[in-house]
Image (cartoon, rainbow, N blue to C red; front, side, top):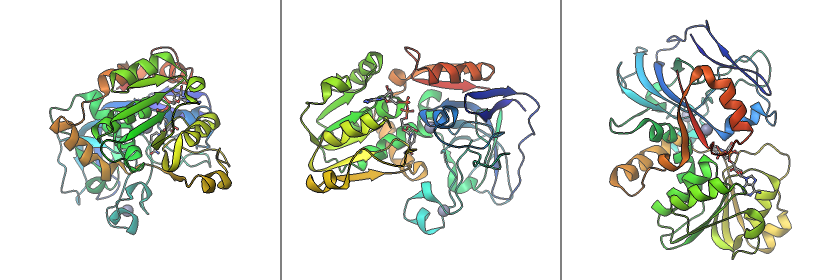
Length: 346
Ligand SMILES: NC(=O)c1ccc[n+]([C@@H]2O[C@H](COP(=O)([O-])OP(=O)(O)OC[C@H]3O[C@@H](n4cnc5c(N)ncnc54)[C@H](O)[C@@H]3O)[C@@H](O)[C@H]2O)c1
Ligand SMILES: [Zn+2]
Ligand SMILES: [Zn+2]
């Protein structure tokens, strides 16, 4: 099988002749990948800011068709088009039953080997085929009309952004500030509007990304140095992950407000002291999104027209051949102008 393999920081390689994924457990499904996203989260191991085992097939955002299912899978059949949330979930453990499927007791992240090499983690979707454990309680059926770019956003960035905004406690008519306008932040601008935000301010150093935020409904888009004096609001999403972005997001959260930190955390400290949080009655919310739980709400909002798909403004490269994957990683990591979201096609 052909796929991309993580060989260590800065090194993602195209490999042919990878072991063919197969049904290993009765709850597994085997997927023929239609497209897989390249995400800011892929950059943490790629840039060496998060440890990951070498040898794993990369990618955690996949859309595809079911090829085969194990004996216990009842909800999906060969030929079905499915969305693969970026982590697996059992649907039965305490966390899953509370909707925190991101922290399923048996959950695994696609495309993430644990730090000990060689990797023993779950192979990812930047490949021709993908094994999905716990298929009935992980996969979500993809509506036929869903275009592939929106479908890939539905496996991570769009429900992640929806959840990030919901965690701010936004009520219709409120104001939202989004710090960081990668695919997650751009989707947060769109989902803030869909969840009833009356005003949205978007912040990013990259002019091209600010322009995209405007097309997705931001009333204003500023570079960080001009945003420091903006009026604080109750609802802030931090989707950049740098120390300066964290500091800005906290500064722009009004007393009593909620700062929803959706960026993956890789450092030992956060840019806000307990004293500052106490003195301004701030609520800081962190954590991985529970895509399996949130995705049905997002699909309903898309179907109802409440959420126009952000894909046209945010998926800049919908058709990158898998063979160009290593170069796509280099361009994405270098933040080449005009590159926001890339889809790899096997
Ligand atoms: N919690 C979750 O479940 C979850 C899911 C998906 C992604 N993520 C994380 O969300 C983050 C964003 O992902 P992405 O794919 O959009 O990444 P990305 O790297 O494409 O985007 C980050 C953006 O932040 C901007 N930025 C950098 N410094 C800034 C500053 N000081 N002020 C404002 N903006 C600044 C960058 O210019 C860039 O546009 C990453 O940390 C990713 O790992 C978390
Ligand atoms: Zn992702
Ligand atoms: Zn579970």
